[in-house]
Figure 1 (tube, rainbow, N blue to C red):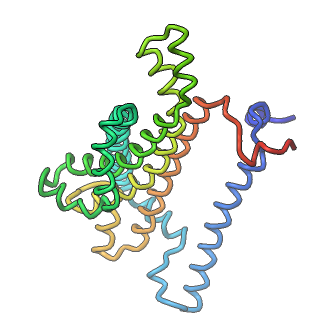
Figure 2 (figure 1 turned 90 degrees about the vertical axis):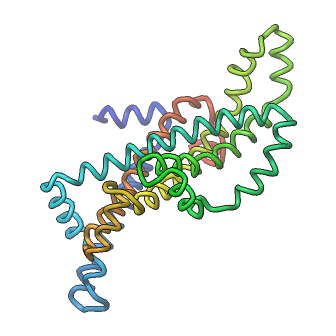
Figure 3 (figure 1 turned 60 degrees about the vertical axis):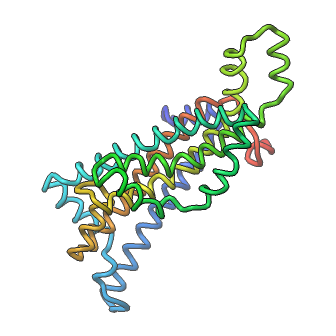
Length: 275
């Protein structure tokens, strides 16, 4: 008899093989890593200290848990990422809606975006530190800035891509400006906004790690730089792995929200053929 999770996936039209393949891929990766580390330790292809095995990384995590500091690093990074990503996304959506609805604002903003957009956010980190100091504020502002530009570009594109016939139809039915904005413009632009959020999520994590490597006393980025100073390779691999885990969790959460908002949307090659 099928379990509840399988029945739920079948009702939603999701193939069970997708989850199985995902877990098999992850398990294969870690087994390969373990085998490579064991082989290298036995045959000394290069210094075994440079490549700790997953078992050693888990041991380092256990030691940090017993010391009571691992949760602090994880929660500190998650909190910074959540606040900075949220601030950058909200600001980008608000500005993007204004720019997308006004040709005058677009003509003003487009040259500035073309000028600032190609500059990597990491090149401006010293500027944020000089302006805001080395506390929490520059880290949050830096993460928000890294989030801002991609979401802004996709929001503007989403607002400009709204079908004019939908807006004219809403006007003909007597809808107000606010109703047209909420029920037509915003809903039509939301798919693009979520694409921008997905793109900027990876940049936000990169900004988080870089920011925590400079002037922080906790966080996964700080754990990497602190482990480097004392040459604790297992701790470095642990912090890097946890960054990947946090990114995966945030990405899954974002994907769940997107799937729930756009349950009606089916398209692409995956839905082109019935199976």
